[in-house]
Image (cartoon, rainbow, N blue to C red; front, side):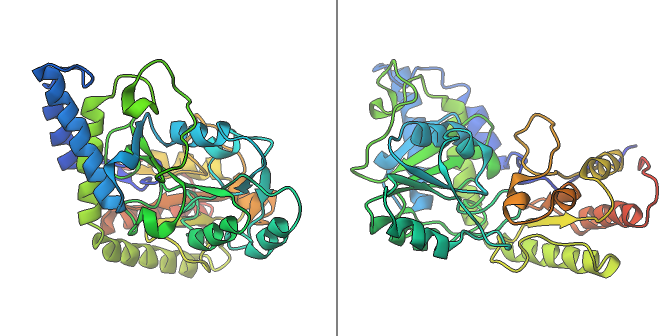
Length: 371
């Protein structure tokens, strides 16, 4: 009987949490339109508003500030594409930010992948103050945590708003919207144990919400379209469960440290990108000199180990990571990196299977299928 896969791609998407599965499946029987005033509609509305309350509670904000969307890509595009004026975006942002405003100025990062605050200070002291600055809370490829509150403080000196893609942060570290200080924050349910195809845009009170979707009065006229009630119910349950499970981060950090120690022991020349910066506990971005990323991915897949190279939103395309290139990594080296991302279901055996394949690749051995 084949062994189950060793899943080490939590940054791409996560398994569905049992609490989310239960909430989602129960909501499938609540068939009313949440905009209808009859009993069936009110029952559906109650599920949506309960989930809105769960998301708000985890983020320390008010339910009225939560706008449900089809995911973080939609939330990012809503803010970025809907904002006029000069926009600054960190060079290591997710493609859903970079592609939304290709004309935006790129904020460089250090060799560790952290936004260059000195450069930002010089830029903000110059002319043409930005209307919006966009920076991730946590990078999806390296796990590097960005100094968002420091960036917010600088933005306020020139009257700029701040957008934060927090997809890789919520569920992996404590997040408080008011403490963070941003104006907009994007989330995706499937990154924290919820269903795919649902997310949220959190909006500071009094800040305008650009409209990407029009044609209805849903979400307080901020996002038209009938709400996906089962997915939203699953989202609410998932984020509540993820917040209650943050202590598992210590176990996951221990697994990551064990993995990185083993990688360094086997190949001292293998770079671990972002290792000198503050990172979330679950992410390892490692290069294997002399072995292309695509070769590594095929070998891992044949051995039943799921990992990634770069972001998972490129329809299977493998290219040198723009994140690593922005960090100053040479093109050839960037094309030799893969990402292992851990989560609540990761075990010691998963790491052993990863190391078996990686060690063979590092020694120049052939790939093989594990029974």
